[in-house]
Amino acid sequence: MFGQQHFAGMNTSQRTGMVHAGVNPAELANLGSKYEIQVFSVSANATNNKIGFSDLFGNDSFEDLVFRGTEAVDLRFDGEIYGPGFAYKMDNWTFALTSKAYAKLDLVDVDVRIGDAVSTATLNAIINGSTTINNNYNQRLNGTTWGEIGLSAARNFYDDGTHKFSGGLTFKLLFPGSYANLGADRFSGTINNNLGNVTLTDASANLNIAYSGNLGEEFTQFSDYTGSLFGSLGGVAADLGVNYRLSDVEQPNKYRINAGLSVRNIGSMKYKSANNSSTNYVLSIQGAESLNLNQFQNVESLEETENILLQSGYLDRATNTKTDFKVKLPTVFSAYADVKIVPKFYASVYWQQKLNPDDANDQITYQNVIAITPRFALDNFEVWSSWSNNEISGISGGIGVRAYGFYLGSGSIITNLTSDNKQADAFIGYSFGLD
Image 1 (tube, rainbow, N blue to C red):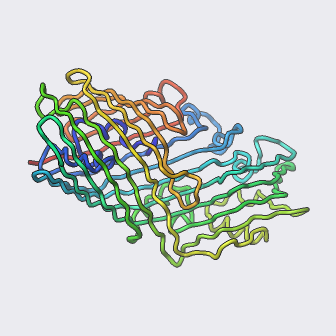
Image 2 (image 1 turned 30 degrees about the vertical axis):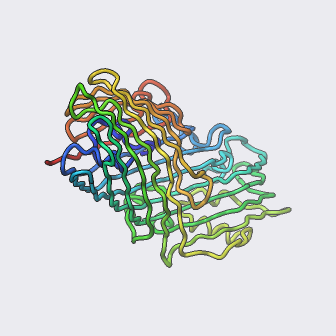
Image 3 (image 1 turned 45 degrees about the vertical axis):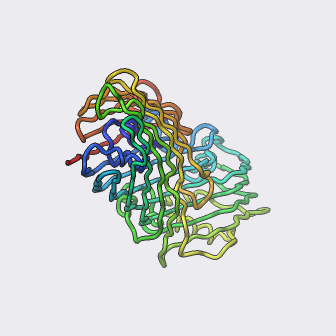
């Protein structure tokens, strides 16, 4: 999963493949064979600002770990799967057909006092008494699955044997699977704990409750995501990129510099079904009124959460319920350069910047990241160590290896084994070329 950089180190490997095209479609112009066949690739990541790797081996529950302290929770589970893909190179053009699927579960800026009160009804911050909350941002719980079919084209625009410039475009058909979003904007209120009886008083917030498909029924189980990766056609998107290569006169078919710029995920998708629901509400609890928070402890469905709140009488509809609603893809800008240091040793720098904030209820999240990757590279073998710094979990370091078209690795295994790192990820894949 994203750290949020899938395939850390492999995406700037010496052997160009579909993973490279996922970062920058212009890289397809650098394929080393006439045909490229993507068999599979899987990347998975969990990153957060609360739970260290060593915490996983303790006796504390997940809720106790994630809602401890005072800092708001940012937690992301993210998966990306490349299905079968094919590319064909002829003269100055390269064309490709790819398939991908995504699954995400995010907690964005969730107040630990609210999360603890709702999930455990113990209120770690206070054993008995009250705590007042006044937030001026949007807290979100969000789950999303969708699939993509990509049609790519790349072209060499200039190549004098030393300098090479290429451009590329990927047009993507989007197949939204399932969706769930609970947003609480500008939440204020007082949480009271009386010997485990937890209530909310003097409260107000702007709520968005939206759900579609499997994630409307439940969003905590692995099968909730894998069971609905592809839905019906519901949107389009595009990736754009340019690439520059400076050839290595000392080593034929090698480069001294390979650099690129890209903008990805320009687009949105629409979830359409009679069973869908997206509603904006105003929560208002005034005077002697109170909402019993204990009743939310075992809730795993947003629809059930919505029904409990409606039955309480403290929700007013701010907009009519929609059965069709749009969700924006996480548009991101990327820049990278892989540079030859000495023969067989290279180093790459990769920078990723999201172009939209994560707090909008209709926005799929992403992370900003910068990574440095030194590598030892032979024609059919590479080993590298990728070191990244992302906005949620901080610094992570890992290792990866490629033998011919097979590759595997992790962008965090080194720091997981040597320090209390807050990220865990791994990837594996295989592709091959034919002339």
